[in-house]
Length: 500
Ligand code: HEC
Ligand code: HEC
Image (tube, rainbow, N blue to C red; front, side, top):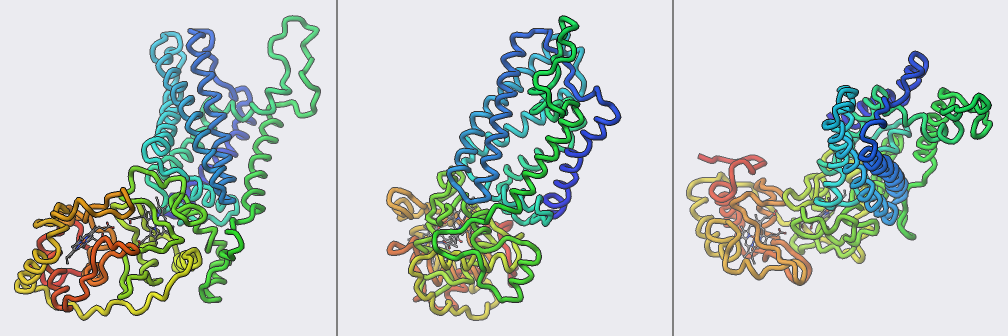
């Protein structure tokens, strides 16, 4: 599915986008135009058209800035994309909306309109609305990081669909709609854009009041026909994109050599063979929008209201979802978080990445983590006993004694101590509402075991204490109780042993 959406469909769309105009040019040369309606209700149109056209030009510039910024790992350029996009998007959406209203309300214009006029408006409005939604409401700025890396991979003719799989849902729909629109574009009146950039400067005067002007051109260039404008424009666009994809060097971080993954040589070979991104470039494309290009947690999207807490500062290494006795995250813990994500927190899972890619990201996290201590041995998990009624009853009592003070008697996260827990000074982080299924790192028995045995460390001020003084049997009793009576059925993953 991911291959179809992000590796096949884009090529179909791009092919249509670049090839159909030529076919139309050859067979219906005079069709490359809008159906002018400017003679009716001119005032409104002028305003709307100005907004729409300049808005779209700004959007184009913004996306270009996002593309190059995303490729070289520049937060400034990607940030500029969002400001330019915000202004351009607002202008274009208002312009398109006003033009649509005019089309619907001015009888002469309505009579001239065809279905594609409306479809085009709806496309423009939907695509821009999704873009604006991301920049104003989601505020996960930096979608350009995965977007640019993936788009460049298309022009390297080695598509890497996995780079888009972890992007936000709205980003994905926005981009897919954009490509659908590109595929549809050459069949609409919008095809006039293709003749615009050069044509406007060199085309013959259109109104010929006297015969004397008839053959004068603004500049006497050889490239004069619509066909040559189209060819030059299409060819230069393709060339620029291919050149950018091949020539722009992947981002690096200071003196740190993070481009080579510390995976087995054999594995590295296959990675290189497939042209798949790894190491720091992969980090920039997948993680920088939230965790920042330098890993300090200051990504463009860090203030998104969709996050339960801030994206972690990866240089400090204060990791929470661990399986070790020391409370220091092991490589396996980091790997687990990257692949599965932390549902309900804003940290997406990256299940589409290959083993090698995930391994290379773990290496990057290891190098970003200044002064990483030895994680030490993992919590020993004894074999899971059968989850009997009796064990559950024992768990109910242990829960009331150890957990209810924070998580509340029924697991709703409303215990007496709940109000005082913060993960950063001034940033409350209430205990998980377990009854609502708020579990970030997995509800399978082993992960729950780890959470209870290792606690949830957060540097010097753990969010949840480690209950390592409980016996393995007692911890399993708690797990059995949580799964049977607290966590909602629908959220249980992993093997569920003996539930009557
Ligand atoms: C859309 C934003 C976003 C993206 C993209 C993102 N993260 Fe996160 N990440 C977060 C947030 C938010 C948290 C904090 C979650 C919490 O503690 O509730 C987090 C937490 C983490 C943690 C801490 C886990 C722990 O045990 O404490 C690690 C490690 C991490 N992210 C690594 C990555 C890596 C590697 C990538 C790229 C492959 C990535 N993140 C991409 C938002 C993001
Ligand atoms: C001092 C308060 C406190 C106590 C006591 C406490 N917890 Fe928690 N617990 C928390 C906080 C805070 C979180 C949320 C951490 C986060 O979201 O990063 C949490 C999260 C959890 C989670 C969700 C982990 C995840 O993957 O998101 C589970 C499961 C859990 N606690 C179980 C327990 C059990 C079982 C006990 C008793 C043995 C217990 N807790 C005792 C504060 C507490």
